[in-house]
Amino acid sequence: MARSLVSLLFLLLPLSVYAQGGNVFLGYSYLNVKSPAGDRSNQNGWNGSFEGKVLPFVGIVADVSGHYGQQTIPSCTVAFSDCVAVDVRTNQHTFVFGPRVSVSVGKITPFAHYLVGAGHISVKNGGSDTSLAQTVGGGIDYKLIPLVAWRFQGDFQQTRFFDGRQNNLRLSTGIVLHF
View (cartoon, rainbow, N blue to C red):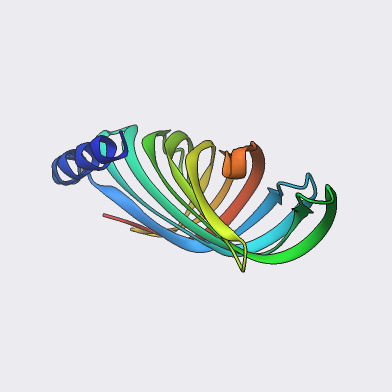
């Protein structure tokens, strides 16, 4: 399924950019993460996206993000059935694709999107996992000068790492280049 999505994306994006334009975003990102132990932690990182317009108000988006920090992970021994909470360094990346709707109103362009793809987490000295990732959210682009805007974005991001569901909040801000 992931290969089909990527193939479709690479077929549609060049055609849509040629026809309607689009934008590229890169900025800082904050992720409030629910760890497998049930605790919440804060991670910092980056978020980038590429949007190709298929209609003046509809685009196809490829969104990539990376977040880094500490999470509390339960560590259990089978022999004694004892569990202890251990703080470990984690790296979490998501690669999601999907539609975005937007409309320009003066200097402000509000948008909303639903993106689906994959998430990957690496736990220092604890393995890694890849799972389905979904991102639902939106934000606004504020036009600074022609072709350049500043983005404020908020997303609900869901992953399923280590056989558990994580419901996370992602906030991103940064520069947008329109073409």
